[in-house]
View 1: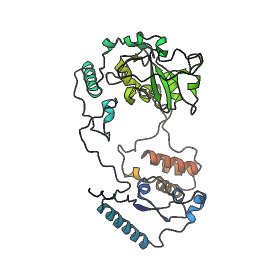
View 2 (view 1 turned 45 degrees about the horizontal axis):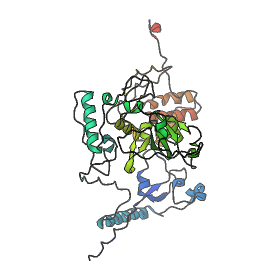
View 3 (view 1 turned 180 degrees about the vertical axis):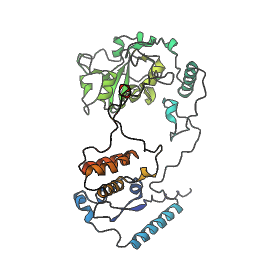
View 4 (view 1 turned 120 degrees about the vertical axis):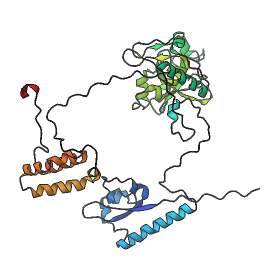
Length: 413
C-alpha cells in the first residue's frame, strides 16, 4: 500500500502594524493584516480597538508601551514578516486574507430547484450562461419553462393551461388545482382516531409538481403547513418559539397570513414570502414556494389589482416610476462642486476639520466671518459638508452654510 500523503502545511497568519490616532498616544501596535487592510482612509483606529487587549484594560490601552522602541526595530520587523510570508508561500501554505480562488468548472449542473439566475458565481457548479435575445415576453417565458424542465424534470404549465386568472385582488388564489381542493383535503393526512383538540401532525412530503391542499413548509427557523387553497400558513413551531404545534388542534390552529408567518419566524426583513418560505418535497428536496406554486399551477395574486405569480415562468409587473419631488425651502450653493469625485474625497475627515479650524482662526474672532470663509468647503463633497457643519457649529455660528432664497415666477415678473 502507498503511504498516506503528507499533511498540508499550517495556515499562515500575516501581521501588520498600525498607529494609534488618539490624542497624546501615536504608538505603533501589532495587529493581523486582515484588520489593517480593513481600515479605510477615513477610518480612525485607536488602541482601544486592539483585540489583544483584555476587556478590563480597554480604558487604559494607550498607556501600554509601544511594540518597538525605535523606528529601525519596526522596519526590521516588517522585513521579517515579509520573509516569513514568502517562506510560507514557497511550501504551499494557505495565507490568511488571500482571496479565494475561482472554482474549477467541471461541467456539473446544479439541480436544487433554484432559478438559474441565482447560480451566477455559485462556487459549487458552472455559472449560468446569459439568456438569448427574445422577440417578446411569451417567447422568453417559454424559454424559461423549457430550461426549468430540463434542470428539474418538472413541467411548468402556462397560465392558460393552469387556469390562472389575472387582475384579481391581492392574495386571491386561482388555478384549476386550487379550485378542486376542499377544506377536508387539508386534514386528509390526519388519522380518523384523532381526538378533538389533539395536536395536528405534519403532512407527508409530496413529489415535486404534485399539488396538495396542505404541504410541509419551513421559513427561517420555524416549521409550518402551507394551505394552498387559502394561501395561508398553519404554524407548527416548537417550544423554542411559541409552541404553536401544541395549539394546532384547537379549532383551525394558529393560521397566519403569508406576511404574518414570515414575521413570526423572524424573516420580516425578507419582505417576500415566495423566496423566504420553502416547501419540503419528497426526497428531502427544499423548493421555494414561489417555484412550487408555478410547478403545481397555482397562483396567488400580488399587488393592487392582481398580477402574475413569481418563479421561472413569469415576472412581477413593472413599477410606475414617479417624477422626483421638487425640494422645499432654500437650497445649498453647489456652483463650486466638482462634477466627479477627486482626490479631496479620500482625505481623512479629521484632517479636513483641522484645516477648516485653522481657516476660522485666521479670519478673526467673529464666527460669522469664519463661517463665510469655509462656506464653500461644504460644496466639495459630502465629507467636507459634514466637516464644515461640525466646525462652524462648534465655534458658535447659528448657520453653517449660506442659503439661496428660492424665487417664484411671480416674484421674477
